[in-house]
Image (cartoon, rainbow, N blue to C red; front, side, top):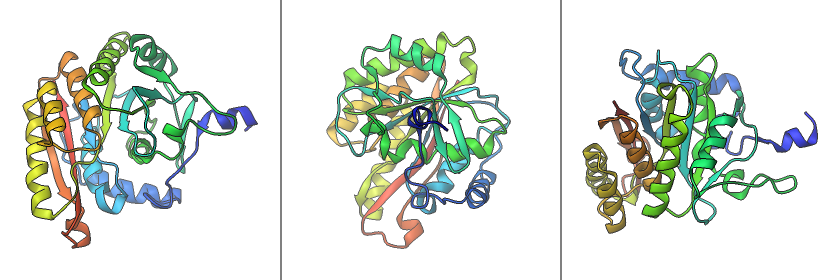
Amino acid sequence: MDEQRSMDVRPPGVAGSFYPSEPAEIHRTVKGFLEEAPDLGGSAPRALVVPHAGYPYSGAVAGKGFGSLRGSDIRSVIMVGPSHLENFGGVSLFPGRAYRTPLGEVPLDAPLAEELVRAGRGVVRGSLDGHWMPGSFRQEHALEVELPFLQTLFEEPPSLVPLVMGEQSWETVETLAEAMVRAVEESGQPERVLLVVSSDLSHFHPGETAEERDQRTLGLIEDFDARAFHRALASGEAEACGGGPIAAVMLASSRLGAVGARTLTYTHSGHVTGDHQGVVGYAAVRMDA
């Protein structure tokens, strides 16, 4: 691979820490998670919400979300996650041609990405800076950890439009939702484009408190009112690190025909570690037509 092409590919950043680094181990681990998913008859949702912690903590939950896609015919995935490491306004689109995990490359859907940038004034294509990826993508784990599920589930993984949301204002939520709707509608095969949010729920509350807060958050998502959900995030009634992305995808999926959301599974890190002093919540949610 020549120097320019290597700059176009986002390399694995958290393989060996959030998830295994060896392909055979990734495949075995992720396949096990996917096999625990309910069989929903091959119907594709309009959108998914899945968690992004290390696989020992949230991998089984993410597996139930992605595994519910089994038998569906997804061509492209627009994936939105929060920025954990860099503050910026609006939404950043990875400017390269692929994401790479130890399982191989996941190519970007260039036409869909281009349409999304045209449609949304707040969606900005990040710039490659010398030999470095844009900061919003270089070490951001939220999108990367989801890709091995797509690579394992599908013989030919869907192409990707990777987005990282900086500040999560309602204006940014509306702008991103509008851009996603227009891009999906212009894709020619809107039923084959899946919206995915990478988000955990509450962070570092005692286990009982976390469960109460997370059930309120999931109830608000299931109410399927993006504006009310965003207000609840602002007031502290709801909590999710990817709350803005959830609201944007909720709003977009409703405009694309989804009529509701359902929680497939929920847990928190205390159920894995046995330490319930300060836990992180994880859920898998489908938004269906």
